[in-house]
Length: 398
Ligand code: PLP
Image 1 (cartoon, helix red, strand yellow):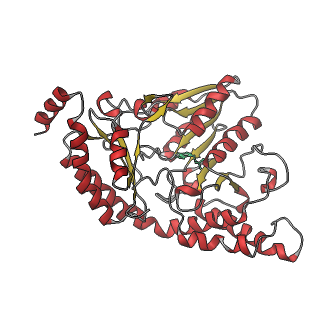
Image 2 (cartoon, protein in one colour):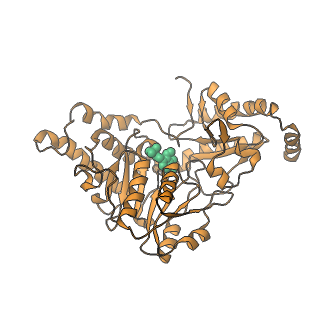
Image 3 (cartoon, helix red, strand yellow):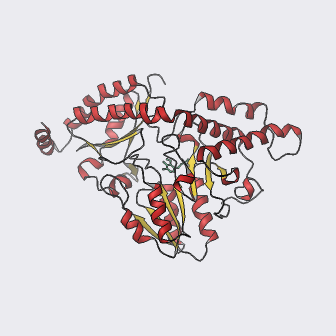
């Protein structure tokens, strides 16, 4: 598609050409099963070894054995949570948050049906975690705390080091799993500094392909496998390793480290330019996260008294891809569980849009969105049934 402006990088990202190049030899030439004994398999088994080393560096893990390759972020989370629970059968309490990705929330709901007790910790109106509630929830029975590093809808970062400290002070045996799917490539990840037990990522969120992820498991943390079969991944994840994708993931991780400075400064500058311009020029725009500490690429803006889906359709008509905070379930518009947990006012929860940038986003693209968006919002606002409320807001902002 020509003239595409892709601002939905928290949903998925474009595969980097260099990642693709790193993958191709393992489709075309070095296609052997890495477990095979003959010389021909050395290319793929070396690639696997090398990739594990690169991921160890990416996480700042202590050794390669702490790295498991998976198929995605959801598998990493399921392996971590179920794996820890299976090794701690006498413990029946889990702590997570109200704003987790469905791969954690839906698993926790399934586990509740199987007899586990789950506490869902809340957030404030900026999307920041209630650390006091977390502290009060940890008890002797808590097997695992599953918590995200950054939220996929708002980009809000949780203070992992502080969280681990709170959890371990109350119960040193409780394991902490961090869902770092939205932070890989956006902020540094250091499992030793964070002092976490398990941490999961997904390749397609930082320019590797869909279908590959990784899970860091601290060498002192025991888990059971989710997928049982062959002895691959030290018996913790059966299935012939996806060597081309794993090579791609490792390349993406290497590139992400090299690009971190650009992400933190330049991607953030473009995000801030887009955000501040919208807030300045659109009278019914409201930043949903307020002052919270966020990843550099994400902004979530509520447009009061209008529907997000309508905004997305108008943006799509001119080639701009973004995402709405709402999910359409069974014909009714269900507002996002994340924005609901933040108590985003009903006036803007349905009109909330997430823009998520990447290293491929250009200034020209951001300028185009800045030029076009106010007109689109104006047009939709004129059709809103809430004209009295909008006029009052207009006066207030004038
Ligand atoms: N965790 C978070 C925070 C996410 O944003 C996502 C995907 O959107 C996932 C987990 C799931 O990742 P995957 O699609 O690789 O299973």
